[in-house]
Amino acid sequence: MASAVTSIDLQTKNAFPNPNYGQTPTPPGYVPPQAPAMMPVPQRPVGCPPGLEYLTQIDQLLVHQKIELAEVILGWETNNKYLVKNTLGQQVFYVAEENDCCTRQCCGPMRSFVLHVQDNMGQEVMTLTRPLRCASCCCPCCLQELEVQAPPGNPIGYVIQKWHPFLPKFIVQNEKREDVLRIQGPFCACNCCSDVNFEVMSMDESTQVGRICKQWTGMLQEAFTDADNFGIKFPMDLDVKIKAVLFGALFLIVSKDVESYHTPCARRVMMLFAILHPVNSLFSHLAPNIKHLDKN
Image (cartoon, rainbow, N blue to C red):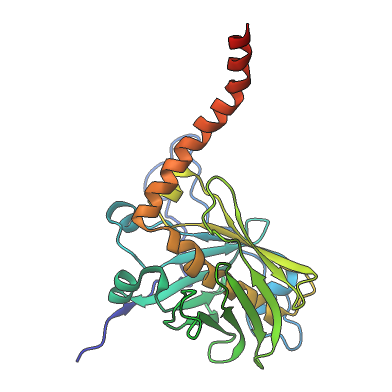
């Protein structure tokens, strides 16, 4: 039986070619398209896996999911692609999902996947692997798990979902399967008109180490697409391998707790709340004045 065909849209080394302006005269005031700014390659410390030297210089990453027209117009689930930037807007990584069409359409946000993380030179520096698992509170025996490899083929850590009746909880492990950090999210990962935060805590939950944040992107984008923006913060001096595992945890949270709210029905409800929210705020503002007029 023939195996399913998989596709992957990786970034090529010549992903942003320079346009040719010698053919036709340029109009006055024309600004040529600019290639995205790339983060300079820092020196790699001793013991740092190749490609992760970028993480030694930063304590925050911004992840932008690319909007696909097929998802907006047809509702057709495509391989996800992400741009990862630092706080200066410089591109650090490019992430592309590898999956087959049948898995994407049938399993939706609960699907297994392989994410390929490339640096600005087009070299794959990390591989994030998520097997097909359950995520229901009724099935505590086969919960979500993600493996982080850097370089590809060399596991450096794992993200394990822990059973809880109503809260999303995860354990961050090192390459020896030793527990290092905890991640806990809110009861509902869909919060209209505001950000959703997942706190990174120490193992005894006494100290907040970092945060994974799903940013509110606006009514139209939230209602009609599953393209989201995310941020992650961690200490500058945190072990670079644990930074990479936390980076992988972001994508597990994206797929499990955030994209599950992007079903067609959920999008309609979200759009309704987004429309009613300013109306309710306006009514709350006018209500005291209306009561004052009634008394007069």
